[in-house]
Each structure stands twice: as structure tokens, then as C-alpha cells.
Length: 311
Image (cartoon, rainbow, N blue to C red):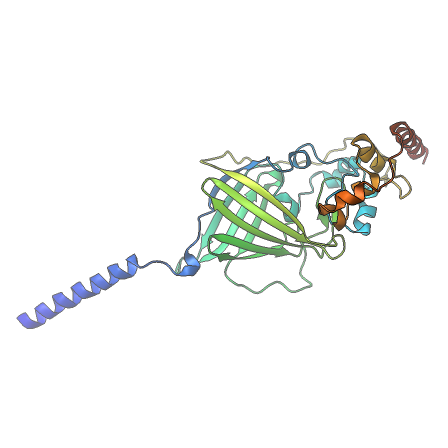
């Protein structure tokens, strides 16, 4: 009996030691990554005019847009945002990450295995929540409904979170009318360096971009933030006749000409295109014709405004 008791005690000690060793073992390489959870304040040290007050209409330089995108943007009128059904329209995820408002990140874990099921992001503006699925689930079928946030799937590469998002509704890449189609996709690489979170994004759109559009956004860690709700109520701001939609007709280009003339940017360069992204385009700039006088552009704007009033 003493021998059996001694054997039982030894076995229990061995099992306890083995259990402790398992608890102390490092996680697998897949689980070794930075913790992105928490509250993050946006830093506007990149593209502040674009992300703050917003870009001018006609400011498309340095963007790989297609002629179709420029054509759509030319018809855009900022007053369209006063139409009630557009007032509460949220940013699509491919633009929302650069929008105004703090960011919150948290994760959902499997209760049994503690493996990540999803990483969630929540931005103050329009209470935009996105679910980044980390569990390898099947992608929705092609006929599934598109949404403002799209469908996101992610995986870790070391400390970097890589995310691919598609199935967007038609949206925009800039708040001056530059569109994105419902075929656009969005790839991100999120990584943390101390208290700084960086999100490098790449938008691909076969209809409105001739090359991928790459941007980066930075956030600063915050201990806590007051995440209030974002109530949005549609109201009639400007009385209009039924069916009246603010827009510029295809031949009304004076508004787009105003930006390059006032800022001494050649008109052709301001219309963008992949060629305007590269340093070599400086040589082309020297060969472009001069812009028309500002007085001439202002006169055309007044004429077009007067024509709109008489429609």
C-alpha cells in the first residue's frame, strides 16, 4: 500500500509539473503578434487639407484615376449632400478609416480555444463598425448584398495585421466627387510601433483606377475615450422641387478649372492620372500650355450658374 501511495503521489506531481510546463509554453508563431486593442485618436499629419476641410473640386493630381472617374467627378456638386436621403449616408470602409473621429479596436475569441474569431473596428463618424473575420470562414457568394463596410478577412504576418475587404457599395476615394465602383477592393496592413498605429491601405478598382491607390493613416493610443452615439436625422435644409438634384452638366467645367487656375497648377496636371504620380512628370509640366486667366474662368462660372437657375 505504501508503494502504491508513493507511486500515486509521484504521478500526481509529474502531471502537475507537465500541466505547469504546458501553461508556460510559448504560443505558436501564429499567435505571436502585437495587441491592437484599445482606443486610438487620428493624427492629421498626413493629407490634413483633404481629410479636414476637404479637397477642392478639380484637385485630382497625383491620383491614378481613369477618364471615367474624372468624368463622374466633373458632374459632382457638393450641394447634393443637402438632399435628405444622402445626409446620413456613411463613408465606405475604404475611405472611412481616414475619416474624422476616433477609432476603437477589440477582438472576439473562441471561448474554448481562445483563438481569434474576429477583430472589430468602430469609428465615431456614423458609428461605422467593421468585422474583420480571422477564422478562415468561407467568403460570401458573388450574389450576396454589398454594404458600406464590405466583407473583411484578415490574417497575421508577424506583428502586422493584413486585411482584404471587398463587396462594397459604390462610394468615393475623395470628398470631391471621385468615385469608387462596386468592384473596388481594399487591402490594409496595420501595425503598431509603441503608441502609434499605422494603417497602410491600397485601393484597387478596375473601373475608376488605372493603378492601385496607396495611402497611409496614423493613430495615437489613448487610455480612454468617450464614444458617444452618432445621431443623424434627415432634414430639409434647402427647399427644392421634387426631382431636383444638384449637379454639373458635362459641359460645365468652369468649377473644375477654378482650382488649377487659382493654385497655379496646369489644368491637365490637375486632372490626375497615373502619370501624375511620379517625379518624372515634372518634365511634362514644363511643356504644358498656360492656364486661362482667372477672370475668364470666373466669368464662365457665373454664366453656368445663371444657366442653371434658368433650367
